[in-house]
Length: 117
Image (cartoon, rainbow, N blue to C red; front, top):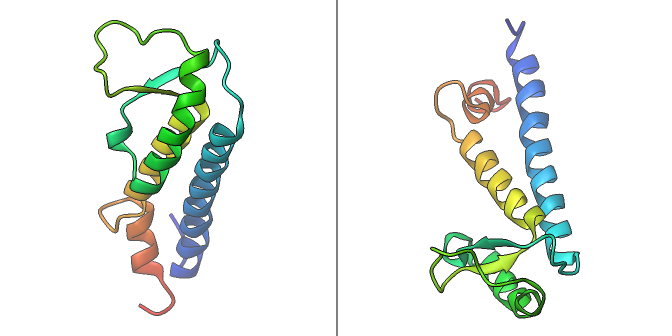
């Protein structure tokens, strides 16, 4: 059990910030690493937010020259990307969902233990 609301806030806030920071770092690494044939992950750019989608599409031309054909069964809309970018985007989605003020999520802990509440 957490002894007080201040302790609850002190636990939940750094946990969320760490998740966001780790996701941003992975996305940055994914955007900055040069393409290699051994590290091609095929993703659908329409599932990414607008800014990240534009960066992904701009980067995809360089990766198309290096990456092999997409695996069979993927649609034409899939583009190659870095595995770090895909992992960072998934981590960001999980961090955003965890920040919602619902049930036992960290967002609910922050909402109930916020100093202004």
